[in-house]
Amino acid sequence: MRMSSNPFRLFVMSVASAAVAFVMISGSLRLDVPATEIGQAGLAVGDDTARAVERVAYRQDVIRVGDVIVSDGAPLVPIVDEDIAATWEIVDAIWPDSLRGELHQLSVIEEEGRGLVGVVHPAGAGGWILSLDVADLDDRLLIEETIVHEISHVVTLAPEVFTFGEQPCEGVRIELGCAAEGSLLARFSATFWPGDQGSDSLDDYVNDYAMSGAHEDLAETFTALVREWPVSGGQIDAKLAMLQDDPGLAALVIELRANLP
Image 1 (tube, rainbow, N blue to C red):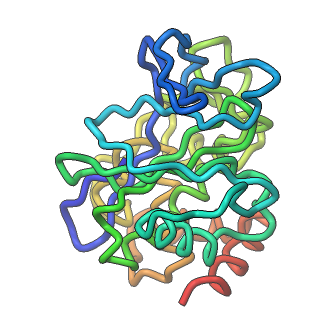
Image 2 (image 1 turned 180 degrees about the vertical axis):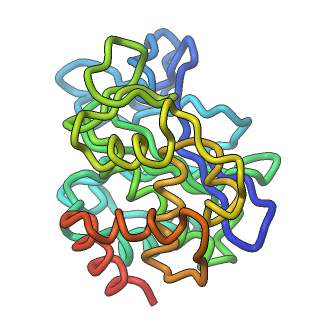
Image 3 (image 1 turned 180 degrees about the horizontal axis):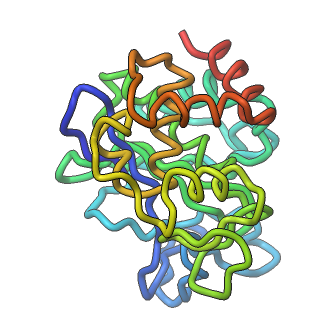
């Protein structure tokens, strides 16, 4: 999700925790699919539904415009809707080749209050679902920076380095769950959010939304790094340096900059 209030764009990684997740199967809406673990969308089971559209339970009231099931980095079937095609064109241009296998589905939505721009959820079938608000298509820069932000979540909240939920944690616990010991999010959290408490000074953040949680602080700082926002001072320089010094993330920064206009 995204809530906009300042010159920099604000984005939120949404966690689905509703009692029921909805799955579209053969054109009919099933309401009897139980929610999967926190952070995931629902997925129907069965031989014929392995690539069914997954339905995300959003925290906001949204209108579903349509979905693109992605296979090997490309739409599984041709896209006919103009808005969905335009949204996919932006995603396709920016999404890095190194993470193509992680993009399971693009869901195009419209949030009734115009507060939502982008959301990622782990998909039940593996990989991630990226949701984007079609109402913001006229602001390409906003959409681009949203995608960059959400890509950082795909990397730093990946199942091999992060576990959603409240189960015992041998790494570093944040609000969403447990960051594996030694992972970038664990190191970032331990350094700048000890005890899951960040600084109360806005000077330590690239924007005010980054103050909302360690994973959002990392994602906004990553976006600032990729887009070279003119931000510095406080803890910002140290945060940028930590991300730049991470080998995997540094390579991703280079790849994203090459893909962006």
